Image (cartoon, rainbow, N blue to C red; front, top):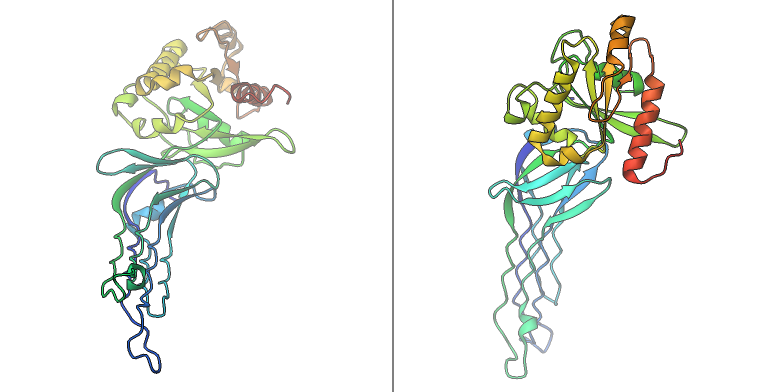
Amino acid sequence: MKFIDSASVEVKSGDGGAGHISFRREKFMPMGGPDGGNGGRGGDIVIIANSNMATLLDFRYVRKYYAEDGAPGSKANKTGKNGKSKKIKVPVGTQVFDADSGELLADIDAKDKKVTLLRGGKGGKGNAEFVTSTRQAPRYAQPGIPGEGRNIRFELKLIADVGFVGMPNAGKSTLISVISAAKPKIADYPFTTLTPNLGIVRMGEYESFTVADIPGLIEGASKGKGLGYQFLKHVERTAVLLYMIDINSDDIKAEYEMLRNELHSYSELMREKPFMVALTKIDSATEELIAETSGLDFDGKSPVFISSVSGQNIDDLKTILWTSIKDEKGLGNEI
């Protein structure tokens, strides 16, 4: 399935049905009192979170979503049928913007969340509604109120507990494939991952957390360079950041500082997120290199040394991440 995280569509709620003009016609009463019914209400535009969706791809093929109009009223004081609402399903994590003004209209940030984006127009009143003591046979009715139309833009931001951040080929895809059931494309060259991947990490029979493998960042990503900018938004909602750096890097600290700077330049919110650092691919490192890097300090944090290939320290990393997530969410520290 192709990963699409942005799409623009046109939406319109239903028009209200027109009120009806009629008079009772019964035997011995050719012109009875007014009995025109009210029009039905137009359908709404409703946005619904669907946890089974992972992309906005569907909206590349269908660009217009219209709710049903209300039916007009009819004789014998019958109210017209209300129009059906148009329910638009989107992935959890989708934000809805006005495409013209850029205003945020809704944030579909939870499973099964439902937001009525546009209300349908009210039905018009039939002539029976306008009877008074001095006006016994009104010959007019109201038209229905038109529905609302809007151009909107969907922006998908993945919601995960942990965001993997690192240079291309830092080992992010390999790690997510080892600790979860996600199966991203993996190869020994940069930019293998061109779309974010989500995985679920099981910590017990009833406990788990989600991780997001974000495509590799390069210097200048926060300013639109390379592949990074379009994916930086996917780490905004994560509870914890995991900086992943290849232990064989020419300058581990410089790489760490670059990654931190890119995230902070993109959003000040990144400064507040708890984080940890993993030095990866230790199966390919010498004992001397591991010893040299063991004393490195990353803003007060010591690194975790891991190998996704050999499995070394992977369980320790999962436990550290899970503890950090629960601390951040106030869930306690029991594993």
